[in-house]
Image 1 (cartoon, one colour):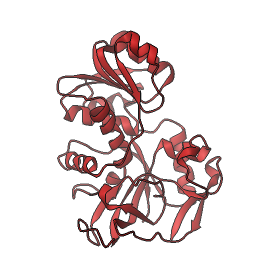
Image 2 (image 1 turned 30 degrees about the vertical axis):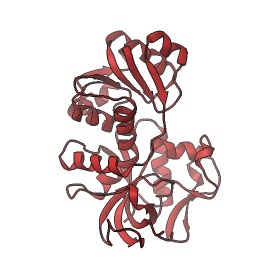
Image 3 (image 1 turned 180 degrees about the vertical axis):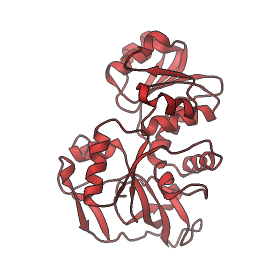
Length: 308
């Protein structure tokens, strides 16, 4: 089968199209024929060599989302059958390929209302947002949440998930993305280039930190006593958290089938839509172009790779 592989860490030129062995389907797995996948920031960070612990070994196929049809079903799997439209965040990277073997317990059916492209945008980014807000942030109805970088992949889903929970949402982005964020339900838009969020907002229950550094440090200022700062990028300063009377933690998303099914239900109900910036073909040049776009940090929503 065709796959886009890295054999060494470095720039986008390390992404190379190769013929590799088609994965075998384990007894508890489904083999998915890829129709679409996506590029997430973690992909280029691994490719650059910054997250070598996430690279089992080289050569390596990157990619953390898959949407497609079931091509084969393991002998112990009863929930799916050949031809089903499914999507997943596999436990291992490897979705820049024509076929992906995935543990059946973390696979969900794609709602009929969604295209493969829309479905491929969801698993990694939306589950990250869900776990940040629900599992770690314990966000509830009537609470207030600040979501940094609301126009990004995680941000666009986090806004919609927070609104579905009944929360009041503030978010930071550039002026060019104000209309988008308001259309997703943002109550308080902060133009980060002209406004200091820490001087405007106060008494927030949860902050979703996607930036780290000074942004994370200043985020403590907007939390109420007992509030929660949840970071995707770095461990919050324990002393600052103690002084502010709040908790802070960093986490890595874990694929969970039941959560993906809940997200699918939200999408089917029209409460969770995928914002797709651009699409690219599953080719060497397509992935290189997509990685360059991702590295620019100016992606609105998600970058999708179309396999067929």
